[in-house]
Length: 340
Image (tube, one colour):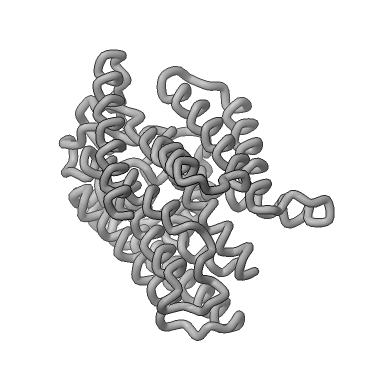
């Protein structure tokens, strides 16, 4: 099996190199502006490798004569998501088309998860809101080198640990094929080779096709885990992004800003742009925070519903307080401004 994974890793590397050559030829680039955290022109859309890794995974299962019928709706949704967002990276796509595509892809993912039942309409509606928010937060957080790579790995590592089942209860192990998580990890590592670099040294950015694509891939795995265990507290695997994304929206509402306009008020943007912290340091900080939260949940939290909820609430409060303290004190002190 490891030989197969090695061959797939080489294949993904070749595919990424091919995309980079195509992007260079077609001038698919990200031009810096006043809201950007970079100052150099960089190739965009390299995150298409995340979708390609899932296509390669499905083909690998077919070659091994395994049944992939349950994954077909999810894969169709992923291809639709990738197609629309890749086109958006190349040319502007109207917001209503992107929203319609996201809703459609989410419904296809829920189909693969077995959630499409009339009597479960309210669960589907809540899941649609949560997943839609998570996907867009992943897109918002993809603003500096290494962020998507580091954070996605911080989500995948706990998922691999849980799926292995050696340190967790039997009910949660084997919630998804290990090969799915391994192929997703290899796609991230391949992209990381070109993106996990200091400021203005990245060879390519993920683009919307990458940030939204990897969010969709990770959400499907977490969805499988939640469906098997009937425990929604596993959303804690996305807690750090969730806190930053949600509180940044609240912050901007308090400032009466237009939420549709680009900004640089996420905590990671303040670290990179106001405090001049290196991109990789910030990315590694987010990665480490999510790993600490997730591994604590797996290894330290008692395996009871009550304990899971208390851990989730406690971790959320700590991260929220840390965010507020950082935004109100550190940044404004550096800039010599009073908190608004």
